[in-house]
Image (cartoon, rainbow, N blue to C red; front, side, top):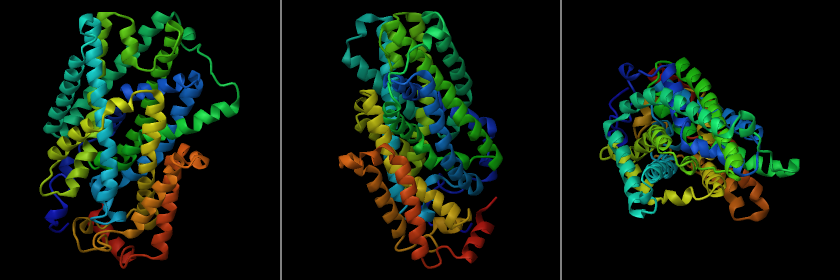
Length: 478
């Protein structure tokens, strides 16, 4: 690749070199186990029980949702492993070298929200466990905010240490969290008396129509849960030793880890309905209800490791690169991480986790309508328009096939805006609310089809020519 335009690159955005390709199959399995085994995954599953599902219905919903989102995940992962480029650079192909900032910022803002949510969970976990050990601190709002900000600061320290610290953190965190999840399941089983008792909570639905009314929006929420990583997975696969390593690692890691850990959440929440007369969807509240200091301390360590793992891996790497992409000369990965942290505070994460409805039907489905269209355009452009061939050199220059009209591809912008509008119109227009229930799917297919149609009807000059695509293959493929 020739010398890059400094206004479009820095050392965090350029393609990875062979020495940086250190992630093997285990690292991707560990990535998904460490990111799946955390509180919001648990709450994702437990909220299904709280909404009326039995354990079989909840497990099926979670498994199906993760198998669906695995498809765009693996498709978008291909470019990262092949060309060594991060998400904000990859997205320049369909949107243009300047237009890419729009989808990158959409993804970054959602990640900031998640960063705030995870930081709030970590802080409240510390506060809740302290309240069990020293009950006199239970009503201290000042201590709660101190715990929250303290855990937020710990995340910032890890960010400052860089991306390699994430790999080491998750290599340790994955087996640790697997052991802790098993321990939680066994402990609650002892309290409940048997697995049969734990899983005895029946479905609250009295007809198929009642079940489907909850199932379909819940399925959208399951897909939306990892809709963020489905976009920025190239940020991780750019470090892969091979396509095989990342593909097999993810194909095994994501569905298996999510199903196993959500089964823990489903089982424990179902048991809480038996033990306390109502399902307790928040594991921090549940652990505190037993009033056992030793259990509380062990649970605190597990929750903190889990939350730190997923917060750094899922909610810092991408927005850090996205913010860096806006002004590469001034914003590095570290600076982007700090921006993420402060925006996460500003998004009031305590409100997003107030109730199961706010979490699933508000937060998860809502942002899936923003990110589904981006995923649809990415997949359509890379596989249907460019046949997996990119001119990497042009991704880092203002002259070339990805400059379009002053750096922006209007076809992609039109497809994105219409895709988001159709996916989210149900929020405001009640007769069209069913579109909102399927927001990710509606946005993904609408934007993807519109993009392909616009590119075929009015192709940019030189934008998809066979000669340039061939040059891109020789320049950037591995």
